[in-house]
Figure 1: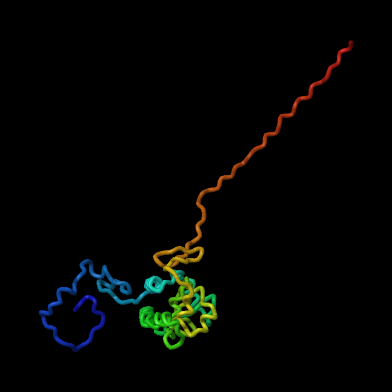
Figure 2 (figure 1 turned 60 degrees about the vertical axis):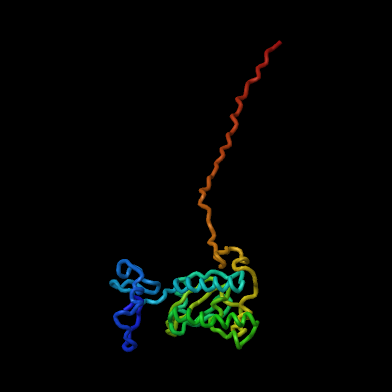
Length: 244
């Protein structure tokens, strides 16, 4: 049984004790459970599946945004940052935002893995729509806005009132784009080398525009106090007159 097997069932061919590939299934050595993959944790020596965390999902999403920006020459694709504040907003939200301030993405099965798979499945549709400058038929991909260049922050959580998992992204998508049935050519209105047209306050990080935190000076300020010396008053001299 290979170390990377996750599910088990009965049936299938008997490969026998001399299966020629059996020596290749043990390619890593170390303490049991010390080299678990992303999405797994050490559970008494075995790597237990726990799924992707939100920040891990964003890391993978940024990889695809970077690849997309380089291949399709999107010059202003921003690097997404996980936001605990947005995740908290999702949990208490009473509705889902679709406007310029925030945009909502639905994880209909509640897992980051499935959403990422959907993203990969939709990518050919998005690319085709962009290439053809097409409308509904080729571009109605419900993950298209995951590639919207100006999204910057993302946070995901379950909505208490609906018991569904959503991701909120900020800034949102202008209303005129939301009315285009996810037509991909409306999402990418600028062209150039990836990272070549980052807005002010951003810098190119290998094709993605990374937000630069404002820096504050750590140089201590010196207060110079000047003292004005008062002039010493002159002592008046008496004028004495002598008679002739």
